[in-house]
Length: 445
Image (tube, rainbow, N blue to C red; front, side, top):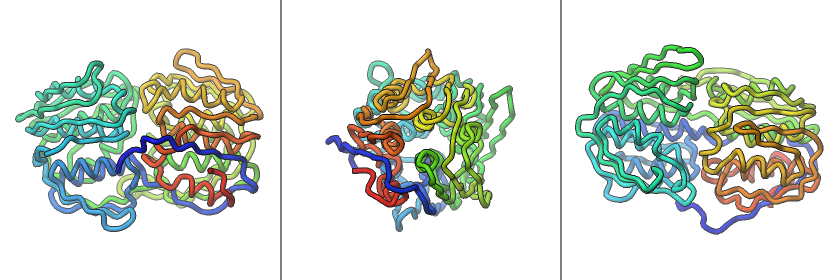
């Protein structure tokens, strides 16, 4: 379970026929991380179905084992976690290596802050470049002590608080990871932890807290929300059915929209309103996407998505939509590059501190395909039209740039290459095989 150190170049070319068929994409990564963590904190045994088995989530499973939980892999997607209860995690005997997963690293910082133990955390070269101060600064108010490299970067050490204090924190930048880290730390604190966010971010943590028996109150405040968690609950083991990841579904949906004559159905996709910003934007662009058999599973809205190719138009994407589609901007930019007119995506400051500087990386990716693209402050402007392609995308070890570049190759006349596709498995194992199956030919080499 190690991130590849040897680059794995890949290439995608326009397929010989339209995409068609019914498919399931990888399980939701955000929910998979949280299912393992809450299972480790609950009393009893949690059964999980549909867990994403990409490297990022496997890192979380390994970390929960090191912290004392029993985590068993039963069959593909099926896992069992026997938890330790709130405050029951034990000091790890080894370093917690989070690989490429910023979500796991930041959320586990919240878990560690509330437990009286010492731990050291690291990650791969990409993760070690990414800032952690956004979580360690507010978590220090619990009484936990953090030490990091210069700039708040990994590796870091933490000595959790013996008697953690509840937090009252206003998140300065929309971030579900920061919010979730604060709430996870608040589980071990006596009293009520209060987190205020100016823009509503994905609420999988709040949904799962309720699912496992915690008391959570949420109130609206402008575009944002106030979340209050009553500390020291007794979390009870609960079954979790992980829906298909909408961020993964986005790549197959984009391919189906861009290759003429395509029609695919993606089954069991999570459509949490705070994650569905891409599909809202695609509807505004004129995309033919229909949600079939909508339902609620484990507190999360789910549906089957039917996608048909068709003409699309450029739109203006407002900045307040960013939290609900922050991971989907690279693939939206690919779609926009083939649409009629100009698409402006506003307020993308958060993209600069993802696995790479995704704002700059996305612009460079499109330019390599011959698209006209501009970066104006925190905005990305894409002028649609025919794409020559033929270039190679520099991925900067970013799995979403790699997948976006390969989908771009399906729509560009001369295809596209990516310098390294090895990191795709961190979030979407089987991506290449699924795309090849949908197109009926080997389109990724």
